[in-house]
Image 1 (cartoon, rainbow, N blue to C red):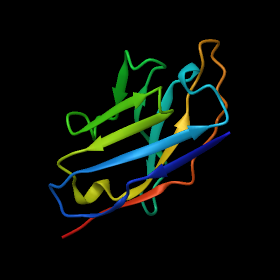
Image 2 (cartoon, rainbow, N blue to C red):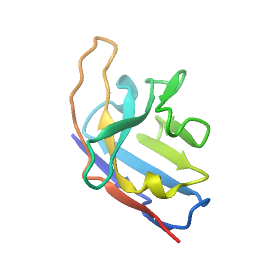
Image 3 (tube, rainbow, N blue to C red):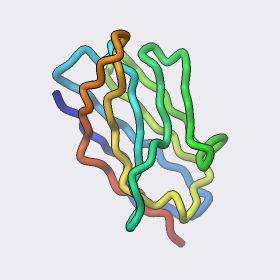
Length: 119
């Protein structure tokens, strides 16, 4: 079971980035998926989550209206479109498996991708 994030980088305030997380080793469409982030000196926090077929999404208040989580089950990939980025969005962003329909969570994490928002 593996999750590999990509798409991070340096962006100016107000800019956009799209993160990707490619999954392998399990039936991707059977699991909800999450994006977390951890800023320097802060605890890891849930940013966004999406259900197995993308019918429902949920966002942290701090990113609501700016970030969009989507998934493509044919590519075993979950995305995080980040718009109107702020300095405080600077963090390592992690992809994580959520629960399946039975409520089982594999608790698998990717290694993360660094997003730096700075002028």
